[in-house]
Amino acid sequence: GYSNMFAQRAYGKGEKEKFFAQSAADFEECVKIAPNEPMAYYLLGFAQSTALKPEEQLTAAKNFSEAIRLNSTQKDIYYLRGKAY
Image (cartoon, rainbow, N blue to C red; front, top):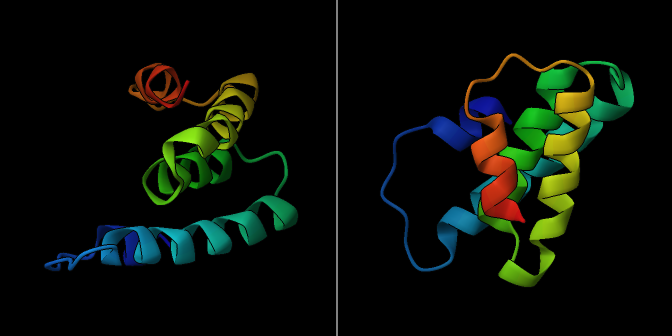
């Protein structure tokens, strides 16, 4: 999921959202395997924030909140959560 999100490529219309949705699916599995790992929630929220429609962004915000609760050290997490809200 991580390499799928950050691989350099030229995206066509709607293609970026598709790739990020695939990444989000992988990160959802990571959350199931390691539910106490803040990075899994951070990356899931990051992928969802690109893949989801504006009216669905609360899902990404909730994952960023869970990463914060688990003491994430990502410096941009509050910005990303605020943007998702």
